[in-house]
Image 1 (cartoon, rainbow, N blue to C red):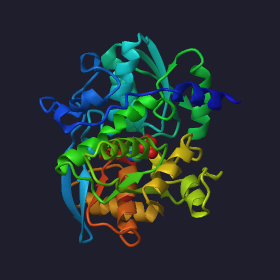
Image 2: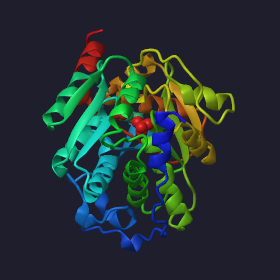
Image 3: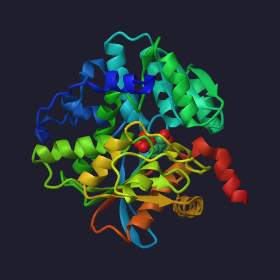
Image 4: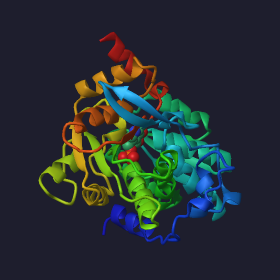
Length: 356
Ligand SMILES: Cc1ncc(COP(=O)(O)O)c(C=O)c1O
């Protein structure tokens, strides 16, 4: 077994509470995602929280198509990764962790750095050297030690695995507590729709923190008879880095090896998603599909969003481009998607698009 497989195994063997979901146990006196604390693996009294969650679910029209869009760019650090970071760092604090390491394409690093700061836990964040500068500044501002790795996202993952032998690995990919936070996306969508599930949810497909969290959350609600169906998941990848789409198209259940090319969508440029098998399985179990989007499609989706007043980063626009594409191939009346990250994270990229 190599280091990555060993790490995966040791972090994955975590049994969570399987009590049925009961809407009467939702604590609506709490504004954010901790309203679901009865179904989270950490008590609310131990929560490390910056007031995250319960983001607005807005009805928006893109090219004449209606869709509900969760405003996940409005989180404390500017992306939905705060869902996972709040629950994971609450757990880390509770078990007495003093220092964590983490690797990311940027946003998860910002989230872990912010919640580590709030918890009084030291942290080292490893990112590819080419990460958007706003994200690097943000990580440093939270007082984290920023480690720039020459090379791609995979080189960064290899570097942190060594560091993780000496420190707690607060990984959004390996650590299952992170998915216990992202599952609240599904709870919120259903609560905001009057405890009903939409027909289709369109989600980004990088390391699968949202896809897998959503699958866990919707499945929990379904098995608890709160909702009557699990929505189809449309998983969006970038044309130049599509190990899951390529596998799924060939009918395979594991990601294929790809040479990742440049894409504007840095958050989903993951050539070797550690939970890739689980992601393909979740999409298939919901009768969902994978789609890919090109940089040109990302740019047009970004402009459509910007010109309606939504300032989002290019990775977020990839998901919206995926929504537009999926309309033609997936049936369903009610569609939900999200803006996954704030535009202020990618000023240079957006400037380059405007100036082109
Ligand atoms: C803005 C944004 N959207 C989407 C993603 C995709 O992540 P995942 O597939 O892990 O949910 C990321 C990952 O970093 C991101 O930063």
